[in-house]
Length: 486
Image (cartoon, rainbow, N blue to C red):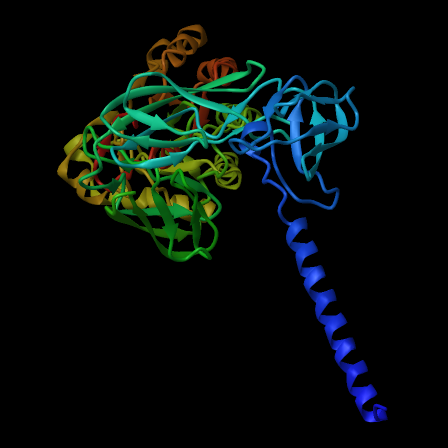
């Protein structure tokens, strides 16, 4: 007869054995549950795990061959043949939009059939690369979850190769065209130019002052015949300014930052950016890609005609540079016109104190007295100089209050005093031109009232000289003469 302790021992051993068996069974079940075949998302849509347990996206009309190992026997079944059918070889055909369950051997997948693609968008359409560089070309269908199953192929040239994930490799100098298509015939194309790996790289500027609240494009310069697409561009002080992948710098706070670029093959360059408060006469928000014309006016102010010109510019989001004769700013009406220029953001220029001296006759006092009276009247000093008659001298060059601004378009308004003639001459101006006029004539005001809206209609931005230089990325040096800014 067995003792009670022996019975207890046997019972304990039995419990342990049962527990071990349960653990083994659970492990086997879990292993079988994770043995489902991976769905090839590249072939038929997007394979994913989500809260809805959708394994596969397909477009209406798409056919997808379920992967079957060589020699493997597998049975297939669709639980809704109105949405998806499947043949004995695993060819799945999407017939209509909807969600359906499908059995493939022991595998169970959910298929979401969505609208067939209508178009394709590529992340790049035209770009350059260096030999040895790689780039991932991606395609998407607008407003759709369908974002795979694309066919990538080279349709011209042998400068690059591309695999079915969209990875492009630059292999030789030249050009290639890549066509991306969907199962139902939607296509998109991109053109690739391949150059040599850069032997060096630089920015369009090594140092640049930009104004708070503005943006500036740093152009990247490669040696002729070289290219790099995968450039890393970054700012070492993003509180001062940020930079995007295309070199567009955004000025955020006053200070300095260094923008660096590194090419795919390790070449680098830098540009020091200094952000300062903008002067009152430069506007933010102008489009550097749109053409600009700088209007300039001499010999004023003359309150009646000058104010008409100011009003026309204000009404058309325009600006101008006014080269003022100092002693003409003494009267109440004329001084108010000068104050208006500053309040509205127009640029003040110096045209000597009394317009009595020309060329070598111009004295230092002719220049400084004009500076002083404009500051007294408006609170601002002039930032540009135009010599009387356009005549220069060493005294003028050495003592000018800023860059010396001449002109590329002369309206001859002083000579004709005819609004029609002045209007015609204004419209001869094109991008980067500096136009000479005189705001003391009523006929000039008449012409400006007609010409400025016409120029704006034709796509021009009407600016002052300082704005023209800023947005054209040109630094105008004090004492240096300029006729235009391109």
